[in-house]
Length: 356
Image 1 (cartoon, one colour):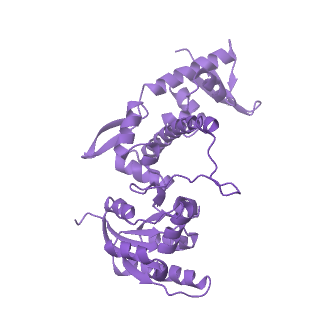
Image 2 (cartoon, rainbow, N blue to C red; image 1 turned 60 degrees about the vertical axis):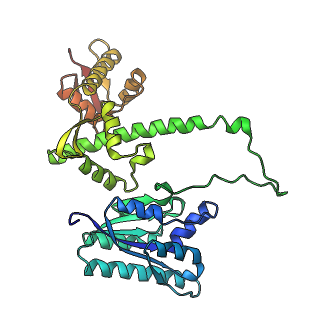
Image 3 (cartoon, one colour; image 1 turned 45 degrees about the horizontal axis):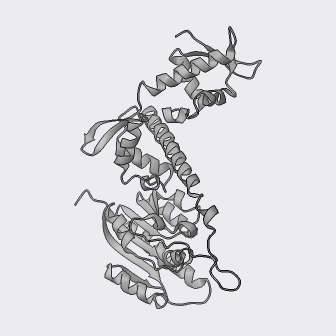
């Protein structure tokens, strides 16, 4: 138990509940998916929700059953009531951060950008901050400020009702057009495939960066923490994977990364393949440069990547762990696949093939 994270949960309830209802056809907010998600991250020792509870009678009963302490913010005029709730919640969170050293993680449930300074202050006090908000009502400023951000709509157990049919001016329900609408799922599938390819590039690039900056082993847990620093909204479930380990095994099966036994059980070491795809890509570069340059010629770096993609449409230097195409070409030159030099007259790098 001593190694478990202690979590303090603060809910800006009006923002969360009303945001979910407004964007999902009046569906009531359910606290249970939030509780389940936090149970996977540590032990919740504080649960507080802030609102004028005279407006949330049923919700109050639901939260009480889940052992949430209800902080009453009495009805006031205009925006002052909202400001009172925000200030009270922020003051309580900072006070708790000073008084309870054992609390390592603060969960701020809101989509309001006004809480961004609170997030910064908590992180300054060496606390991990997890945000929770409704996707369509969350300010774009809030997620990047957090260590991790969970969209409530995507949590396991949240039921999103299907979109209701639009009504005509006469009040009759407008039926969907079957012929046109039935043919539209295909682009979504293609988009999903592209997302996984972009994820593979992101993972490979991140592993390469970690290996280059520290020179030590890169474990799966360290890789996940780094991905969350790059994008606090990152979640493997958005790409169709149940766990981060399942995602890594998928990428290993496609030779994007390699997995080996790590220092702890269930936390494998992640590395980039030393050979295989990289050597194949260097060979492809040499071949394309030779074809384009001709006998004794040279090829400018600008536009060369398009030539490679004509020969191999799925080519991506980022999948191989390189941050840029120039970095990939420099690695190919170091490996002896091509010769790379700067030409001031052309104001560009020029490449010539080398004999295998």
